[in-house]
Image 1 (cartoon, rainbow, N blue to C red):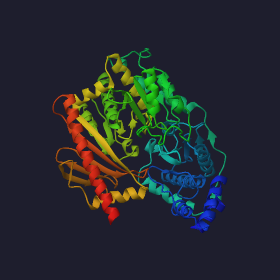
Image 2: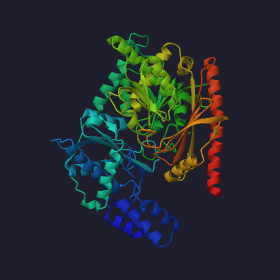
Image 3: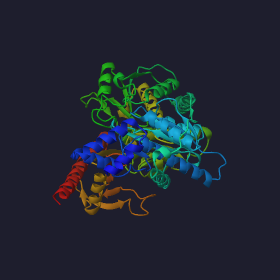
Image 4: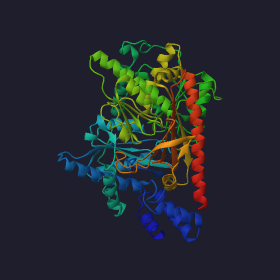
Length: 586
């Protein structure tokens, strides 16, 4: 291991990680157990390239995010793009657009990617400044390039960074999906066997101006405006009307603020009140432990700001602005505000998208068509909306690489705060366009004297009440999460929440899903559902719980479904704790 680390350090193109590796080697030689463990964790394997690209800790070694790994990954991706171009018999050289967020190292990694792509003879276009992931996804289609690279770790902890890949041409700006990931990974492995200094680099890439961002604002705001009620012959607030709705906004120390506020202004939406402590990009994320709006405490500053101005709505993006959280005043909460779950907001935005599509079809005198889609671990409430409005419904594997590929997609979402509102603009989850749609929805409700909670009650009355919850176990490593999932397979639950398991689906079984996936589904006799999977990006085991009631008033339905949910959650926790205890004693 020391020999491998020494060879890595000798070839490293970055002075800081080179020094880090050499210091680690010296400590390991002296018998420092912590250094030996870190050496093994950093140099014992290689950061795997998959459908989420790369994501990992910043540091020295092939298991970390650093300039060597980024350069090797880019060279492998370039080789794949040339291979794909030859397969299509294209006469043009491949092309790529590269974006990056405000995390530590992102700008440097993006420049490395641009230089390596240029050195491989690929036309490379670097976005001019740190920006949101949806902007890079948009740029792939807008510039009609072969691929896109986004340097981001999204909502991961501050010590992490990542490398996300999109494809153009027939993939239309979607994230990569199998078997493309394996093909790219094979090229990366081949190139990683040679010294990084032998990878060709050039400075022939282009740094773009502000035109891509301008086009994104224009197309996104046009899509938002086209869906407002006054454009669909329904009651609502006239475009540009000043209302008393007050919106607090947090960028979570990320890169969403500028583009989001430009879209809001262009769409005639109310000016937002920023959470100033979190408005500007800061890769250290000083005010939050985990820069994810789902995490406890992440919205505390937003709640404080909202209370100070008596806000009607809180809009929160994660650091790369591909996810959206919404919170609204709620008397039962100590903070004065409650965050909507991803499933609640997905239901509301999907319902709104369905109404919008039906109104457009009526205007054009055509038959309603298209699909509403969500991931398999998201609430099945969207199915009820699809059936009510005459759309097809699709459940996909987790990840927007699958959601974005649903034929005839009208709207898609995942429970982890991801929403695809306008597939013709961005073929990926987009927290900015989703937030514009959400603010417009809340403003319309306010003009009718209603709240977002009233709208959810209306949904319960119309579609039944779907209650969803999640049990998340943080584990020491991603392999540990996979190991716990394997123990579930070995000793599956037979009863949960006092209801027998009546059907089990293991998506690792060939044919059970489009591609095998480490997901287990348990359907219970009382209609509840439990889904278990290890996270693909973090060391967690995630369990998704869904219950349903359609008996009585909205309040009665909600109470019944949430009572069942509480029983189910307690039962699942007891089951998983039993598995962990059994494994430790063994």
